[in-house]
Figure 1 (tube, rainbow, N blue to C red):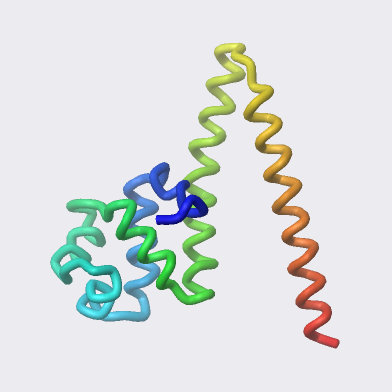
Figure 2 (cartoon, rainbow, N blue to C red; figure 1 turned 180 degrees about the horizontal axis):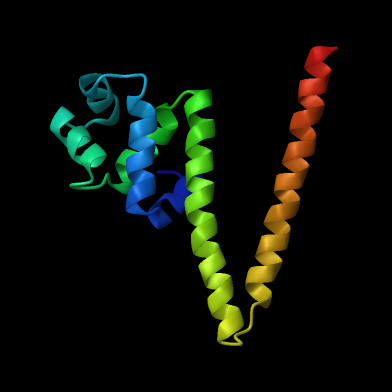
Amino acid sequence: MGDELEFIHMLGKETRRRIIAILLDGRSYRDLAALLGVTPAAIAKYISGATHPSDKTIARAIESASRTEREEIAIAIAEDLSVGLSSLVEWIIDERLPGQVLAKSLEENLARLRLAGVARRARIAGART
């Protein structure tokens, strides 16, 4: 698993289940199991919530997802991580703890997202002309 997917370790069980469900939408249990290197029974357990997929399995899922599936997965992950981040911010505020490191990181990452959005819109506009 590459460093770019380090965030996977922070994902909750429900988000992991959602990722598997997103991939299962267009595949059979057997096909998805083969793609992820697990058994069809494991896929059934992930979907039912009896167990959850490992970081390695989620990394394989993300890497093998189509563009459309990756977009759905990105939304699920962003929702999960934003809840945790909001909880962290509330705790820092409530406890009157220093939040400068977090604030700086959030500002830098927000700027990166905005730049990526501008670049994406420019590519789309250029493709239309």
